[in-house]
Every structure is written in C-alpha cells, then in structure tokens.
Length: 112
Image 1: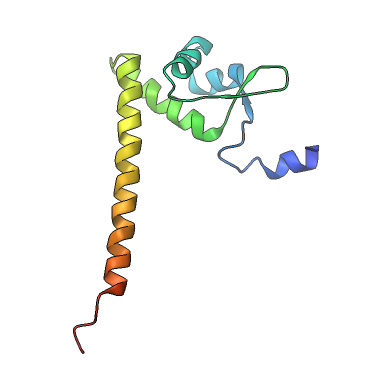
Image 2 (image 1 turned 180 degrees about the vertical axis):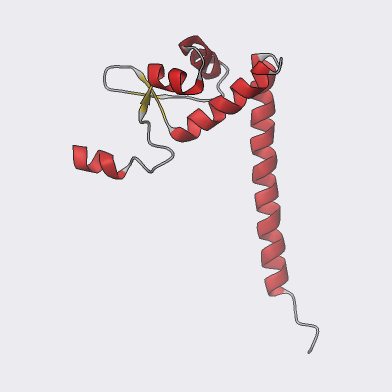
C-alpha cells in the first residue's frame, strides 16, 4: 500500500490508524486497559508488520464505551459483556426494522 492509498483510508472507521500508545492517550487510559479489552475479546487490534497493535476509530469508540462503564464502577468483564449485548440488541433492532420495512412495502394496498 502506498502513502497515497493510506490517505484515502483515513476516513475508513475500520482502518487501523492508531498505535496502542496513541489510542491510550486519546482515550485517557493506559495501554494495559487496552490489552485487557483485547484479552476479554471485546476488541481485537490488528498487528503491524512489526507486531505492534493498531486500533481503528470503531475500536476506539468501543474502548471509550468500556472506559465509561468502568469509570462508573462496572468491572471490566461485565463492561465488556454489556457492550456485546448492546451491540447484539442494536443489530436485532436493525434487522427487525428491515423486516418491517419489507413487510410494509409488500402489503397489498387498502384501496383495491
């Protein structure tokens, strides 16, 4: 990937643009906290060619949510589970909305 290709990906939420140190600084947390989220399998950072962890903006948003819960006294394992359940609920709601939209568009009209 050339430098020009990399610039085009900076708007991509899934592009692993941030090092562990930068991600921790942006979140106001420690690198150990990010490692703990990885161990809990909440986020899985990509690895650079040198083996260093790299985080995407999407992963940083998840980590920020985990930090928010932990800062309010939730144990890290519980915070990770809550975030996973929130994500599953959001996906289920999205699927239900899609089913409703398809059902409404295929229903016969009342004027017939």
